[in-house]
Amino acid sequence: MMKRRILIMGAAGRDFHNFNTVYRDNPNYEVVAFTAAQIPNILGRKYPPALAGDLYPEGVPIYDEGDLDSLIVELKVDDVVFAYSDISYESLMHKSAQVNAAGANFVLLGPRETSLKSTKPLISVGA
Image (cartoon, rainbow, N blue to C red; front, side, top):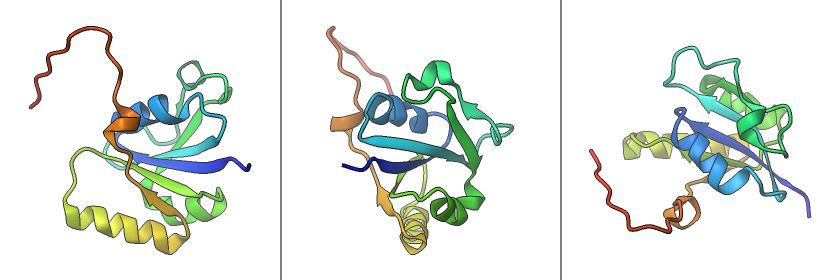
């Protein structure tokens, strides 16, 4: 089976969490890039090899989200995983249409795949 080529659209938080919980150690996928639009001074950097794991000895590059269409084509992306936490429905669906028009699937990961497992009782406070 061919590895699915993944690009994760994110905001330097949920994107890295999704990478670590779903893709980091999964040989069925190859995360070829992250994109960022909301965090200053992150473009041109890499998600570091020390955090990316054995499957990513060079780390994972971070690109400008403005280059999304060309990245999908150039990197032969199969799936774009959306990993923002705050966006309007209208903006979300615009991004989905943009990704589909460029030739990739648009993916939203759910809690079954991304939740951390706890062995202790857990109390959560959210804002």
